[in-house]
Image (cartoon, rainbow, N blue to C red; front, side, top):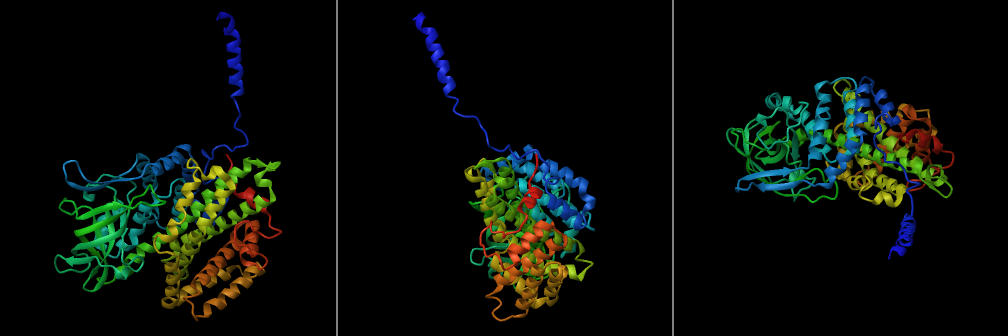
Length: 565
């Protein structure tokens, strides 16, 4: 036996050596511990261009935070651990509590302490909405789902101002730089969050078909107390402290402020039936809720609920633009990073002509989306002082939400394909970006609703179309392709025959015209040329990404947008 020990040991060592089948090579390093803001040239240019250069230092610091490995991991943890509903406590008391993973709470804390819900309201002025949008755009790249309550808490401000006494009572807590997730009356909190509940089963986007009834507890009217009875099919972020809700009165659909706790400290009759089992946006909870005599106060005029809550919806729709632009940026950053390091067929993927065409096209789409979004952010900053910008917000938000959100799913998929099989794995961010990509197009009014809203603006605020065309014509003479496209758009807009049938095509052309004008005036020359050649010119008929025509400087576009560790 002793004689065989040495040969056996040698054989084991030999087999152990052979078991080392490969080393990890030709793979990119993890894209983390980098500055999301510093590495995004298009964002930095937009921030300076649209009036928020004063926020540069703050954005640099926030970019370092959002690019850190710690925050990126929080995004994964929040999505791997879905919220859980507890309708009752262990003694049988109704609590209607949704519990989240600590990662979700940490992300909420970071967003609210950094003013993503309130900085633009607390310190309005030049570039305030622009700077806030830039921060939201950075944070949404880490984790988009928790942005839902952040957005609604931000967006409720202009709606709540329609009822001054309620605004005076609650705006200090709405805009406070803090986060308190406890399930207690908001009177006991220094900072609160706000959600909304509009949708019902039978109506969907047709909110005038809502059946929830509001019963006055006294004289009724603006600011007065009511009890609401009925079912809400989608309640966003049910652990918010209060909600803006639509319900029917004798005078028609009205808007209400609905807290989760009654003023006497008892639990309000807002009972969660179940959480939605969503495809994406899973870190955030959505639910079906029964209102069984839930106490609420009317906001705005009786029967004016749609007009009142639209002041909130306009802001949430703008954040859909920000969020989808953000998703595009993270998707293209992942694709560019992968292709910068990965080699195939003898050279880096980012140097392969066909892959360059795809990557550059993805960059062009994302930069166009960002340019349009940040222009609307500046218009929001100027809306009170400029009639032009006020009208631009009115029609530009509908057009932008339609087009940017509509383009995001295809963009996410194409970026995933650039990465290949690894991009489909759940330990990569791409599956989450893909599942998240349709949400903003559906939430707050689907594509058809946005097109109809644009038509409504054309009929009720004719100046909004003139304001939009003024923006589209602002680059006149700089690019013949853009000039021809804008001229054709003018013809389309003056032809009102069967315009509802044609509305998607019209809105698409409006979006492309505005994006083209912004890129030609302010964007990178190579990106602007690629956009006009591929989206506005007559020499490209490709319907997928990667159909940029000859002559585009793909290498320059890729170099500009690739993040560097």
